[in-house]
Length: 320
Image (cartoon, rainbow, N blue to C red; front, side, top):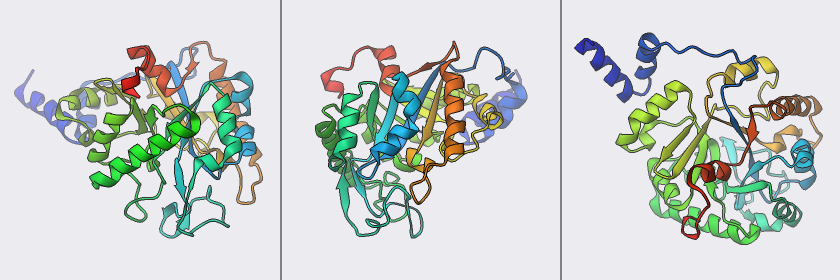
């Protein structure tokens, strides 16, 4: 192999986007037909974000009716102590905060939502994972864990985990960062306290240097599960399935690159309008996709911890 080509391939690994140019040129990848019987991935994790003090049990049950009836494994990302000032852009409060509470500068623990907590505790197939701490950024209008403030990161991780453990009587095993973003410092501290993390496609800069080649190769191959020792990094294709176009064509286009684990993030509260009315067309489309996947012979719905146990066995006391 010419020296110049070797140099280009190495350079492709070390630059954020250069690898795609060279690998698609020199190592073309054939995409299988997603419409066939065998799908390119085997496992699916459904992740419902923003579960908190203000989550309506009735709305939660309505959106996940198919899961609850069939007792399909489901993962909920719970905010331990939600802030009433959570915003997705400057001055706009997130829709899961009721207008009567918004902007008062208070936090509300998940334990106050007794009906929802009791329901989840009684549902063994629902896994509780930690979704930030308050969901409000340390720096206003920024993702909560996209910060270098070590003391604040540690405090929020440990306090949130302790509160969820007390409320649900089981420790959260995985971490779901708000807005799917973390800083390198936050990533290291999350790894010390959890079995894994779930977020959208990440930068190699969040990882130690020795993992860069496997990360880049996995990204090229369409593999969304990365291991850092026993720590699992589960990425997703970057769509919110409660607001995206849920017809089958966009779904096929998005999913054709996934080769191992497909994580589908959604927000159950987004299936309802500002007045609390169900957006029926959106829910019907979502359920149609779920049923298509559920009745497919090659697909298995799992939780994050199920994937970890398949690789490493039972979770020990020291790991929780």
